[in-house]
Length: 271
Image 1 (spheres, one colour):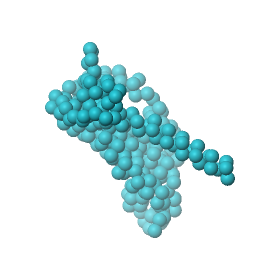
Image 2 (cartoon, helix red, strand yellow):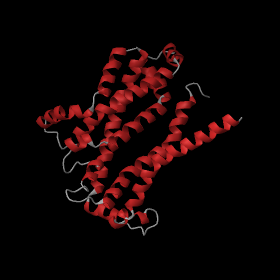
Image 3 (cartoon, helix red, strand yellow):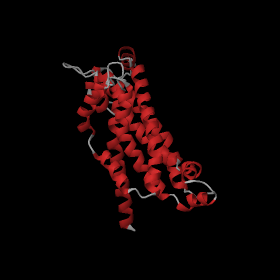
Image 4 (cartoon, one colour):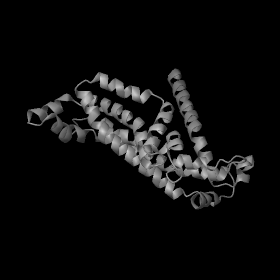
């Protein structure tokens, strides 16, 4: 009994430490977004200070953040949507027909560091006169999103009972019809999981956009970098811009988490 109680105390203490370790930087960022640069450097005003919206006004007035938000949303939605359209049927085929070699190729594309492809991408896309457009960002993000979606969905399709598909084939459906009418509706929670992870990657990606975007097609992570100057850093505006980037993703994750978990644990034969 004593050992069990000690283990529970230890587990709770470790969970609290981990949560604090993850949450405190975000809390500091949000608080700093409402401080002046002088207050940010003042340790006595870490928690108690006079809040101001000056940093957010500066971000949206001088930083043209409305256009950057639209760019990030466009790239993330387009890359995620295209990856789902291509990746879900590919995952189903690889899962049902045991295409291990094809799955290995997809895994290799997922393992290759994206930075090693930036120079070839820049050379190819510059010759195609695509550098600086949103299309090149969508294509580069799909290089990571597509393998991610394929592997998530392969595991999801592997977990669905094969009898469901076989019953569709017995009723006269083709493999494509069985996929469209039976397996695809059952995989909506898996697609939601893969889609949200893909969207988060595209929204937060900095490296691809830094090299391949133009002055009018910057995404939010690259726009944040503009607040870092050669001689000084505008910490207040930087934290405000970081809050604008981070909070929407956190809200999306919090509001969609329970639906994703419920869908994944519901089972294919529920009800």
